[in-house]
Length: 444
Image 1 (spheres, rainbow, N blue to C red):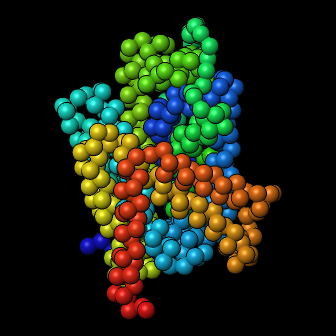
Image 2: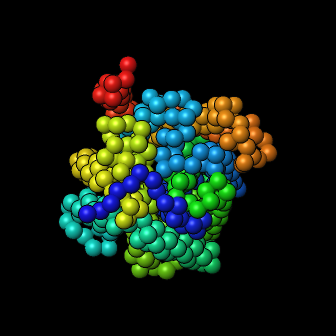
Image 3: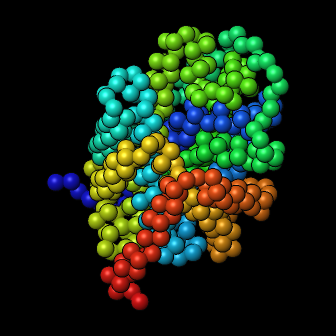
């Protein structure tokens, strides 16, 4: 019989936290979005500068989360911040969104990318992508069920392999001979320069996305009030360095014009530098990155169930913490089941990955905006708790973060398809569920 408790042990080091965060962020986006960014900038300097600007915005967001995580450590992460700032109903709606849309949708999206590239290595037939996605989801959920010790050690290995692979691809590109530029003028896409750059930033910040998952580790990182700042800042700097390096390699080998017309920028670069065998190497690299992201996303995603189960009596079984594995075992099972259902849903669409991105984006940026606002609320309400971690430009930092989130919320509704409407509809279904749970608990 497996003993259960209600409190996690602080068993993660700074290195473990960095590996989790880097593993989540450095995933499949860097192999898909650079060509979209190149199509919306006017020059090579603008291209590199946009990636650096995206990294700076990400660092601002990481500093906001570092302040909140150091002041209010919890396995609930953003749920805990929103509940303290705005009350249990808003906290529950976020938890519902994360369980049904944000996190499970992200897990399914990454599983589809793994399936796409695994299919390139060894085809399983017309339904190979969702089959690979389901297998990866099942295996990594089982790994996390075994215990935190096993999953964090595997994540450290996955993250190291991902970073080394990305560096190897970047070095291959930077040391190769560049191709002659395509004839004719280099022009950005139609539309205003301001609008094109804004769209480029949407793709860049999507690629940088996932750093906020570190908040769910705050109760399990040793000496979290001090070390959560190190985890968020150091991991963000590693990610910025890796992204700038790989994009310089793309630019060196292909040039801006070829970047704009490429459907698979990394594959095209490897094909030019090391031949057709490079595409197989790239497929293996993307699979490695996807496994790293998928494992870390499963690990952090289940933590919110523990916090929710502690607060709501009808969901108490979700909050049970397995003492043997030092993990929320019931949460892993439910999260895996929901993500598997989304894999089936995605398999029925034309592009499973795109459907999952549209499904999650507006809900994700809406709640990230609320987290930014909660920073102001909690500073005023509990100045003693937020005092340990303060940086210069205290007002500017969360203000910039909130403005960025508001713009991306608008963009995710304006530029995406029907999947966004499905995600918003699922979020609204949480309202009657909230009323039902409150009645179940005997509250007015």
